[in-house]
Structure formats: C-alpha cells, structure tokens
Image (cartoon, rainbow, N blue to C red; front, side):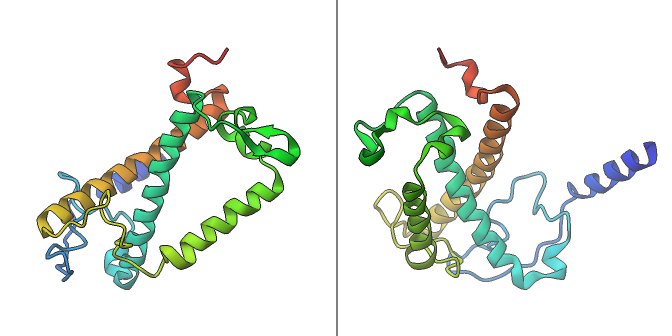
Length: 196
C-alpha cells in the first residue's frame, strides 16, 4: 500500500514540472499552447500527449473550451435555480406542469416530460452540428464578445486565457455541486439558501 501511494505521489509530482512547449503559429500571434497556461505549472500535460499525439491537441483544446462554456452556464443555472428564480408560466401546459414545479438540482431533469427532453436534445444537436460545429477549433463562432468583436490580438489572447481558466474552474465547480447534492441532498450553496 505504501509503495502504491509513493508511486502515485511521484507520478503526480511530474505533472507539476514545467513542460517544454513548441511554438506554433496562430491567427492570434500567440501560441495556442500559451493559452490557459497558469504559472508556475506551465503547460499541464501529465500524460505526455503533446509529444505523442500533437495532431490531436487542437481538437482537445476545442473540446475543453466548449465544455468550459457549458460548465459556466451550468454553474450560473444551478445558482439561479437553487435561489428559486424561475420563469412564470407553464413548462408543459398539456401536463399542467409549471416552471416552478420543477425541483432544484439534478432531480429537475426527471420532472421534464419526454417531449421536452427531446426538444432540448434537438437544440443541442442543432448547436453542435450547425451553429457551433465541433470542427471549428478556434472557438470563434462569429457572435463576438458580448456583441463586440475584439480586434487587438493581445486583448483577445487575454480574454481567451481567462475563458479557458474560468471554464476549468466551472467544470470543477459544477462537478462539486452535483457531487455534494448527491452526498448531502443539497448543493454546496445550500448552506447559504433556505430550503424550507
């Protein structure tokens, strides 16, 4: 057991060693490898995929960016819904189901009628296949930054860096909220909210 723990610690310590980064060209005049890099860790590549599978880096970065965006929306949605801020009216008039009838947390998905879930999945498919295709690796889907297009390469690189790091935090955040809800019955923010 002690040997396994020592091996695990030694292996994880290598993940924090600065990695050698190769310079690549991009339209941003900044290496895609430099985006999302947080000092003092440098490029975090514990499995060595940048050296063994460099052609897959762009795809992995695009997936990370998209998952980060979804996770940021999920964290905000969790906070809003757990504060009982809901739309007025009916989610499903035929089932007499109001938005306010949907329970908070992960139990909410079970209360949505099958036709509603099918609409949600159809919307996801439309976004994934047509509007924001997975093959568009740069993450620029033509919607701008809050309606404005960033022309300055340094400012754009800084905002992309912030987006990647906030997305990583949000992925951990929504995972923590879901896990805590399953363990305790309330999300972590439940400590601050009245669930009566």
